[in-house]
Length: 342
Image (cartoon, rainbow, N blue to C red; front, top):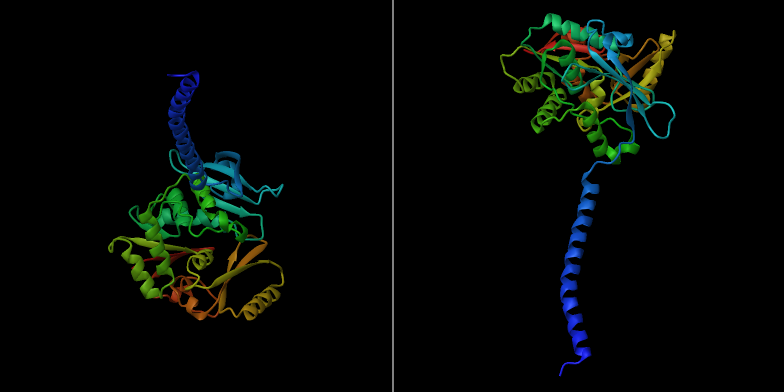
């Protein structure tokens, strides 16, 4: 005999038979959603500790401070670099761009007292370099230079360069931002609208390794990167010293310090010699930042002075670049030195 209690128990069993699978599906689905959310948070880059803010844009003729009179129709965009903890921009960035091409950083003004993203250079030196390359090299010539210089040369002189991508090597950021380096790299690549290939990264690494070899070995390694019969030039800027030291600290020791220019040149030289003595540096060279400031690059030891890049630049008490036998010096403008590769 079936009672009301039996019917109730039967209905409860049936309800549980339907509910339990539904509950399992719900839990599994929820688990997948939760895992997907954590994966999104893990793989998606966070927010960089600074932001580019577009201030204005227009033709190069509207930005006389860049000294780009020879490129009046080049599109320029000016950005302030902002951080949350400061009411004032920590830097200014000027990008140049042709139609349907990625923007190229042409000038960087650092308003802080520490290295940040890029190292400053005089705009007049870049425009003079690009003009000389466009005038005195053949259209088929290949230019080897640090990736940022390469992009500038390609934009302004329209010559082929070995490196065309925004490689972000080395990443120049304060120590407090090191944990956010991946986020910063992703942000910089997004701003530059550039996605270099893995092969380009490998070639650039070989390029930098050649610069820390002895001159003869280094030039031979540079030639291995390109066609042996191709007309090729190597462009070095004095600020490449610091960047090379960041990439190869075990092979190349370098430091820098800024000084204000004064009428007392002898006093300034004394300060440099004191700095060398305190840190046991081997030699130094200068970079003019403006009419008021200079930057002094110090090499840490004698092995660093024997490298290809060091012997391509003028260092105190060292043989001048004109004496270099491994490559021929063909042009010099400010911090830029250009050599024809044999």
